[in-house]
Length: 124
Image (cartoon, rainbow, N blue to C red; front, side, top):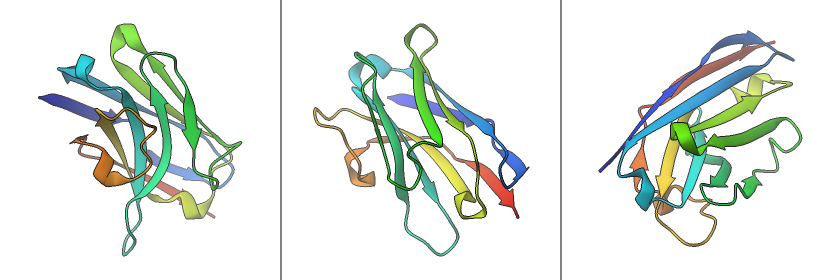
């Protein structure tokens, strides 16, 4: 079993920055990809970014390219999401997830393990 715990959410004004962290424990060695998703009220959970543990290859949703950066620290079993130039439409609960897949997973059903989520609120 893999346990994921997110932190770093909060409230910020538009144009500001936040850094989310996701610490994994348990059998994280069995996972290949780590991803960040977000879900705004009344909307479906959407893909934000993903990274591989091994090579650090990344993929981003078009809506966050150039503003968000996903990184990982293998020694700490931790994945980060640096969010810059935040917009009100980035407001959502952000979830960290782990996948055992072999292709870059961008859909929620491709991830087996999930954190509890952390709220990000961006005011205009």
